[in-house]
Length: 221
Image 1: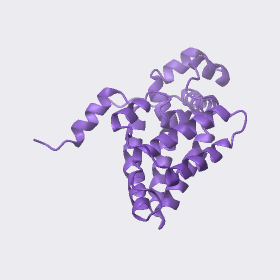
Image 2: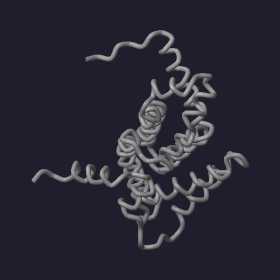
Image 3: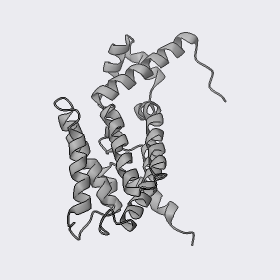
Image 4: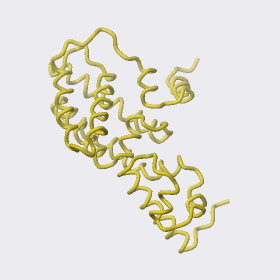
């Protein structure tokens, strides 16, 4: 049975809570509590729990458009004639989004248990970034030893600088990104590299999701 539409006052409260929660999580991150949301919105805790009994559903609802925006950036980067320019442009634009939204950065970098929304978004972004990387290698812009997991490492490292310097020097991540990308182009990388399972663990992907992904990718017997 379809759920009955909310009364006007209830819908106003729902929108107010969404806007308040988004502003707080963009500023302070995903650790914002329901009490903080209720206080900032001027409502009771009961109102928050009635409208959003599942916290993960609230987070997914708040950030779905942002995850979609990152996916679209990756697609646009693939349209660059110069793959290295496309890759660096994508990473810069993604970090700009994260710089303006702390909660988004935590989601994308595994600072919060990954939801199906984030896992699906990353599943769309990863092959696009891998294609850019492979094209950049073929074009001689990157050494052959660079892998997609190295891009993940760059994301985590620069993100850590962004978080540490957020209240001190909000643009320090740009310098860190420049240093990291230059390292990919010119450093001799160790032979060992992190595997996909380790990367998933760093991003907070639960084992059940990895098992499901493996099952989905395996050919039918």
